[in-house]
Length: 317
Image (tube, rainbow, N blue to C red; front, top):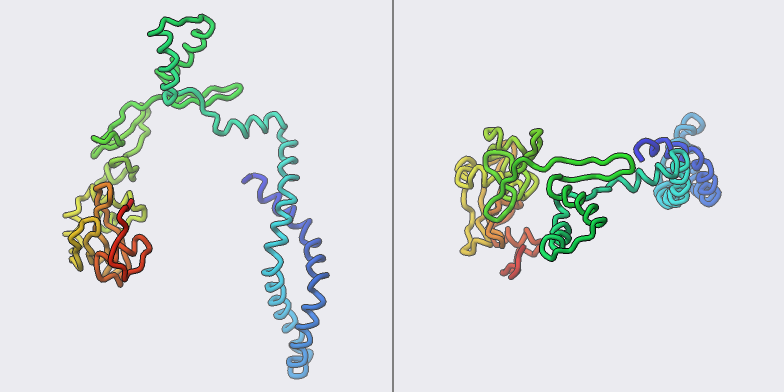
């Protein structure tokens, strides 16, 4: 797509522009120009004459073309695109070879037997190991499957190439079996590749490897809400609130309604945040509009509910 998209687009547009223009102008050109000319020339022609006639014509033409294209352009281009797509696809297939093209397209997600297939291996080997079943020709094939499941990570199967990946060297989890480690990569391979995870949420590596890079300002304004929660937990809510000199604006008795806080952020002035406990028991700190007055109003805002309502949903996620 990237290789042929621009080229195809240019060629198609060059071929179609004249046809489209002829059709559009035949339908609306005479009518539009007659109306424009009648309205403009009577007012402009007598006053400015031939000296600015061409200039006025160019300005009017630019305006008319913009209006015409806004009305018909999208529709025309959609029709052209639909007509051309099938032809272009067939031409690309002919150029690269139908067989290779089909194989390449079908093989993009051609993942095969791996450790994630362990349920099937366990099912099949149960009959062999527990029930005593045995059929040499089938067991010989099953052995390949079993070995891949036992010793390999992801695999990708192609006609002439089999790609086999390693399994992770280390995997760390928290008490809920989520990927997690507070000081090193939660999952790491023998070549050193891996990533950091905080209680199931993937986070930037520097937050762990270079903890000084994570500041309260970064944590409280991070765009991704799950990563923001993780950043705040890494730093600690007490540290964040002290660092930003957070002031309590309003605190609700229900922790799932939360506490409305106001902080002074660098280069942003006074901002408000709702510190709230979600239904899963995790603490979040959510930016809310500056005009929020109470924690309940802020909580309702996060659900898109009217601020004058006196209740929140019974079940929240």
